[in-house]
Image (cartoon, rainbow, N blue to C red):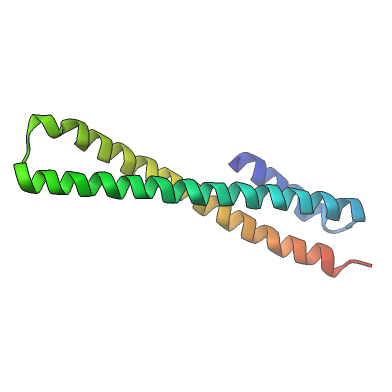
Length: 115
């Protein structure tokens, strides 16, 4: 997705110099697609954030009650995996958000020059 949005951003910035009704329609459809992708990743990021917080809470409670035991290793692994996964989801969502926001400037340029 990152490659796709970068390529599209490069294409539309060049094409925006000579906008056409077809280009505006294509851009609108692509923006809807990118916004949908961004929304889905926001929900996924929140969902995994909730799972991560739940796992960390369970880890904290069980560590406070029992200390470190071998039986808690799966909970440590699960918590570590969820933290790593959440970091990557936040990074990807940050990329989507910033590039979609940058495309709003191109949208303004396309419709500002509308004749």
